[in-house]
Amino acid sequence: MEKIDTAVIGGGAVGLAIASALAEKGKDLFLFEKNPYLGDEQSGRNSGVIHAGLYYRDYPLKKKLCVEGNSMLYAFCEKNNVPFSRTGKFIVAVNAEEDKMIDRYIDNACDSGAEGVKRVSPEYVRAKEPNVNVYSALISPSTGIVEAAAYIKCLELIARGKGVEVMASTKVTGITAGGAGFIVEIEEKGRKEEFTTEKLINSAGLYSDEIANMINSENAYEIIPVRGEYYCFDSSLRSELAMNGANVYPVQKPYFIDGVRHLAIGIHLTPVFDIAPGGRKIIGKKILVGPTSRAVSEKDDLEKGRSGQECFYEGVREFFPGIKAEDLKMDYAGNRAKLKGDKDFIIERDSRYSGAVNLVGIESPGLTASLAIAEFVKNILTK
Image (cartoon, rainbow, N blue to C red; front, side):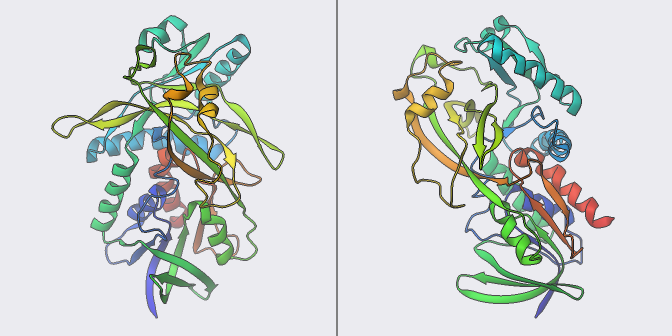
């Protein structure tokens, strides 16, 4: 039976960043991803926003790792030529009641250390984005966007360059803990194998609860998949649809899972990269509208009962009144790994087997925080 030093389960942005951070010369590190393509679940099916850290005051790990990850991700993209843009973000209130949330976000930003967040006048917003209806607003200048697919590919190349064995289409089907490590069963294209590993990193996203239970049957984590759906529109179709490259968000809206109140960031407007002549990536005319937030029963269910145009129209019409339902075209969907009973990230050694680290409930802002999460895991393993 083959013996390796470290196994990372999950080939999204977080798993790849961890694998790269842990790679050492002379040490065998394998990363296993059950899907044919890396980053094909949460990492590649979100808004691609680099978050500043406005929403996580009550969630210490999300707050810490989002703010740290924000600057780390910008530096990484700059160094490695990954397309990104510091678009900035407006959060807009459309009435006096919603205005109360603006002060809350500014307080959150002061608490977390998010840079440059402040109130701006409606006139300031309209000077930047004339088609936005606004009663009051804030600006978050360190919010931006990243081309997630390019980021994931870059992380993969760096990991491989450090000697990491990246194995896609390889599903972990069983884990037995004991002795000095773990026996891990994998299946690749119908072929089954076993190996032993001293360290095991569970960064399996939507399936992190299942992997945690394989490690230790006493683990009671439960991931609830929450589907986020997107539509889009072409901002060049009519003058009242024109946008100038900013992210525009409403104040948060509540939704419920098993009777527990959660706050969704809300259906918002996000610019998307396009390819300019010569191959350079620029902000294009396509605008993403979404995501929705709806719990679904199956972790891989991306299509059953997709929402119609009206849902997205209703989500943005108050702050973007020039849009019509017929402007909206269906785009992709993705499921987020909501952890039942806890709204913060869980990143910790297994309670029974210290060679394993479980990362559970790594949803938004996981993409932004991915590099900071990797350093956090590395520090856990060196304690």
